[in-house]
Image (cartoon, rainbow, N blue to C red; front, side):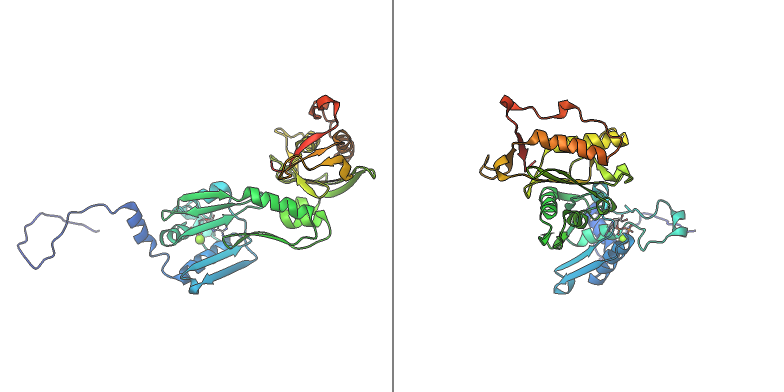
Length: 348
Ligand SMILES: Nc1ncnc2c1ncn2[C@@H]1O[C@H](COP(=O)(O)OP(=O)(O)O)[C@@H](O)[C@H]1O
Ligand SMILES: [Mg+2]
């Protein structure tokens, strides 16, 4: 038993230090003091980050130190990554994905479980996290403050999505994307759009994409679509971020094409809301059927045979996705003044 007896008494001893009144430490100071026990040196930061990488299932970890780790410690792993929701709380004290209650310690198989390390690192270092889960094409870059809260969040989505699409459209190109030293994309030269897609997307769905060639010498369409038995939950996505449309080697956002694929795929699998399949559509037409000179930055182009392209996709992809319904004619673009053209926005 532990008892504290408190009584007020008057000391008249001038040797004693003068006490100020009791006050609560500011939360940030208290946090720093308690977290100082977890992170005591470069060694302990490396140890905690390394263990987090292993707990995340990494099979590859790179650690880079600047000035013996006193300037910068960078740990890069190929583990499961963090979803946007988890990224938001990873630096908060006692937030962990590894246990839910004390009893779970009996069956613990991870290095971490206290949910303290990231919080402690945040209390003593400037922390930047670049992360992405396998379900996402683009990751996010987050700066965490001393209290572990997200200070700024910069999605690298746009640049990364463009780089990924460019990688698929240019198989022979070696392409990497780094931000603040963190590698977000790495593609080695290869000889097909499918291999490039596998490198960029790193998914089973990408590995099992099925090829289909449509059209003729004037309009050639090469399509990669998910295998018929690919689980629709992973083969289909709520956005078109993994539907790469490439016209004469140029990456474009081609909504009419996305719409056809979304409809066929969703009909095939009975999906509501509908989803866009992970896919690659490479269109080759004579340059005369294309106008890329609509805007100075060449982000939009005009395709003069869109009607034919959509019909080919509808019929051809319908065959590769058995059971898919026919695309509603209302999905077809409106032809202004009878001209066969569509505007393609390469920039969203
Ligand atoms: N490299 C990483 N990859 C994926 N998730 C991570 C990584 N590092 C940390 N996390 C996530 O952040 C959480 C908090 O990390 P941490 O503070 O070290 O706590 P703990 O490891 O004790 O759970 C972890 O539970 C984990 O879900
Ligand atoms: Mg940990």
